Length: 553
Image (cartoon, rainbow, N blue to C red; front, side, top):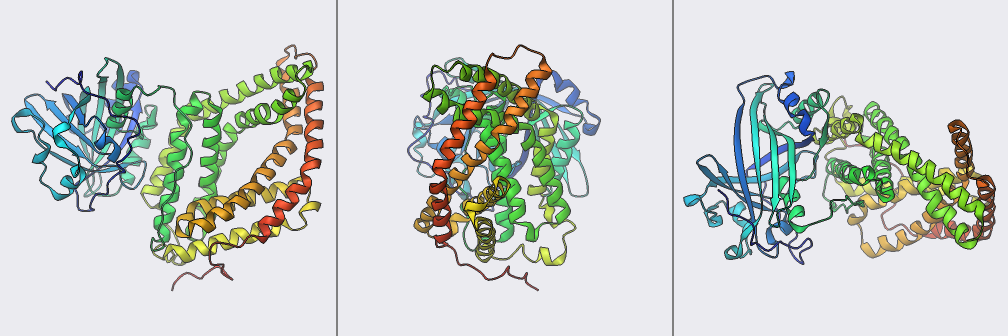
C-alpha cells in the first residue's frame, strides 16, 4: 500500500520560486487528451461501438504523490508519484505540459521502485535529473493519494497509429480526509504523432456519451484538494504570450489559438457557477480567438476561418445577454441608484433587470453545459493541434508558415492601426453605428498588441497601451449606453410575454437611467474626442510598413 499522506505538510498554493522548467525535446513524451465523464455513463462509454477492439484489461491503481513542504515540484509543474498495481510498484516522474494544446504533451519516465519505495535518484536520464535539479530530495513526503479502477484497451487505427484508451473511476484523498471523485477518460497516443486521431476519437465518443474536456491533470487536482482551495471556480484572465522575433508565423498562430482556447475552457466553470466575471472572460476569449482568425487571415484557408468564426459567434451570442444585463445592473444602473437612493422606480427597475439577468445566465449555463460546447472545443483543438490550416491551403498561403514572425507582426499592427485611424476621422461627427465600428477596430488593434507585445521594447508598448486603453474604455461605455434602448425594449417585451405583474414604476426608472447617462455622455464628449486625438498622435512602437508583404516565392 502507498504511504499515508496524513502527516505531510501541504505545499503552498503560490510558492515564491519555481517557474516551470524546460524539458529537452528528446525526453520521452506522453500525448493525451483527458475528458471528464458523468459516472452514470461509464458503462455506456466502455461499450461504445467505436471502442470495440481487443480484450480490455481492468486493474486497480493506488498512487501516492510526493513533494517538499514548500511545493518545489508543484511550482515547476512536475509530479512525482509511487504507483502500486497488484504486486508491481513503479515510480513515475512527469514534466510540465508543453505546447499548451488541448491534448496534454508531457515528458514522462516510469521505472521500477527499488524495494517498493520512492527513490528519485534512480531516474538517471539527464532530462529527468534536470526536473529534479535543485530540489532537496531528502525532504520529499507524501502530499495526497488516489485510487482508481482503470479499464484499458489499445485501439489500432490507421497505419502506424494507435491510441491507448483508459477509463478511470475512483477517488483522490487529501491528508485531512477530504475526498474528490474521479471519473474520466484518457486517450493517449500509443503509436504515431498525429494528434488529430485523439480528437476524432473523442468527438465520436462524445456523440455517444456526453463528455467534457478536462485540462487539469490528476496531480493538479490533487494539489488543489490538498491545499484546500475553494471548490467554487474563479474567473481567469488571459495569460501572457511570450513570442520571440525568430519564431515562425505558424508557431504564433498556434500559440495564440491555443491560449484563447485555454482562456475559454478555464472560464467554463465560473460561467456554470453564475459568476459575472466568468461570463465576461469567456466572451473576451471568444472575441480574441475570432480576432486572431482575422489577424492571421493571410495564411488561413478562407472557408475554414469563416466556419470557425461562425461557430464562435454562436457561443458569443448565447452568453451575450448575461453579460449585457450584468453591465446594465453593475455599471449603468448602479451609479444612478447611488445618486438617487430614495427613487423607488429605480428599485423597481433593478428588480425587473435582475430577472432578465437571471434568464441570461440560465441561457449562458445551458450553452456551456450543452454538448455543443464540448464539440466546439474539440473541433477547435483538433484544428490547432492538427495544424489543419495546412489542409487545402493554396501555395501562397502555405509559404507564409515558416516565415519569421516580426515582419508579419509589423504588417498586422500597421494594418490594424490604419483601419482604426481611418474610422477615427471626424470623430465628433460620427453617429452611433460608426462609433461602434471604431470600437470594434480598436479591440482588434488591442488584441494584436496583446498577441505580439513581447516582440517589442516594453516601455514603448506600455505607453502605447495607456492611450489605447483609455480610448477603449470611453468607447466601451459609449456603446453600453447606446445599447440601453434595445435592452429596455427587450425587457418590456419579456415582461409582457411572461404576463407577470411588472414591478411598479420600472419604466420610469428606465427613463431616469437613460436621461442620466445621456447627460453625462454629453459632458464627457470633449474628453472622448481628446482621447481619439491622443491615439492618432501616438507613435507606433513597431516598424510601420507601407504595404502588406508578399509571401515568399
